[in-house]
Image (cartoon, rainbow, N blue to C red; front, side, top):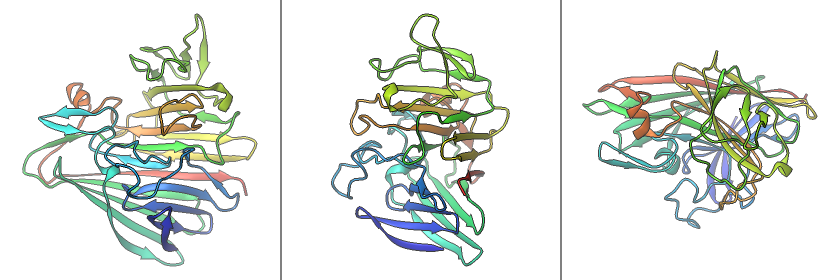
Length: 326
């Protein structure tokens, strides 16, 4: 079932079946603002303390200007702003700040499918996102397609900025991902509250802490009282599936993706220690499939950016599912 309305002034489409209800904001980057498990009433996505502000109340020229949590698509840049081939790219790219069009492909008792689309002028590419819910399944399927509309090759990085929190995340939750390596950035983003040592490359899931001899198991998600804020990159993936389990609620969030494209999981860990508005005090965990741990310029230099030839197309599929809680 597909319904329309608004959330705090933002036009909203709700894709819904008997088990989950997903809110999409087409004019705000086709952001997935809510991911609600109907039997339990749990919304799995982070909401910032300030919340989503109405359109026009912020400058909306930077990813964080009106960041209220949720799930955003990052393209053609992810991470720090950069210049590539004489073109400037913003923090976390272009499409999360653009208005997307949409076409309803199907909406009946068995299936709801909507295609959201946006044109990226800086790379002359067209990005499609088909979102599908099937009755009786607590899964959202996302098929993403990039089309190079230009007569020359284009390079880009791509990512999904998925941050769990809301009613779901708490002390005692557990993250499982079939990885072999964890990497931390060379420089700490917020040294005052970082708990992970910078510039490390260790065997997953154990990371070096900042205290001598300290080892931290990144599968264990602490509570808000941890007052920490870290970034890490998880890679050398055996296959594309991770889960976050809440034992108390008996609920599990499962993400599946194609590791041929998304070779890294950006593990963002704002466990109460962020101090930069609008992130101050937020509690969540980012489980973000990315093409590269670098922005577009650095990924190009490291041979990790995606190259798409003239008039070529690239398609990939992700799936987000909920189990338990019935």
